[in-house]
Length: 229
Image 1 (tube, helix red, strand yellow):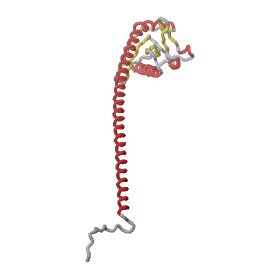
Image 2 (image 1 turned 180 degrees about the vertical axis):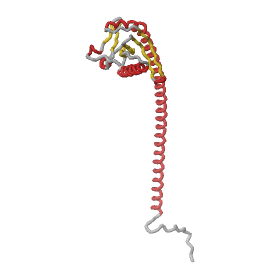
Image 3 (image 1 turned 45 degrees about the vertical axis):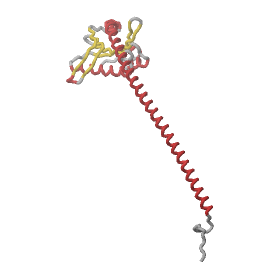
Image 4 (image 1 turned 90 degrees about the vertical axis):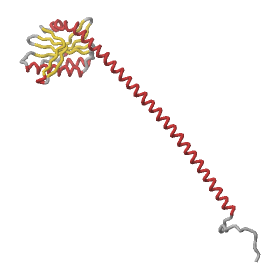
């Protein structure tokens, strides 16, 4: 029996040849390589986007800190402005106290009021009846009391609060058998027409600067009735 020296390749199956299998393997390898390159590209793109996001977060954090700094600085400026306004308001109060108040009696006398007594910065404290009030100028005689509130630029809320103040004082007067009529006036360096009309329509007298002194507008001059409490 003769023995062949040739090595026989294992059968590849019907229709398959070594060349076809090798070509398929090469295609698979190329596909895997392409997929690997695409994966690497996507990973690099993802890494780039993450770096950009991190940079944006860092910039946003910087902006937030800068905004917080600006807010604090603005708050500081507002507080400082508030102090300055407070000083101006106090200064205005001093001006009224030393210049306007002494002339109020004379000014109201022209309107038919004879006030024999004037008080400045009057405080009412009645803990028993929960009545607390501060009055800038308190004019009085045996029949009437004029409560004057002084503001640099009165608004409607100031006017409403002044009316409430007079109502408190009326209650306090009743508790102390004071039967005099209480009236109200509000003074301002600047008075807008709307606020002025509002004060007059509520029966309050309006005091405004006029030349080197001040003038008093009566509710009746505008068709309104002076309010008495």
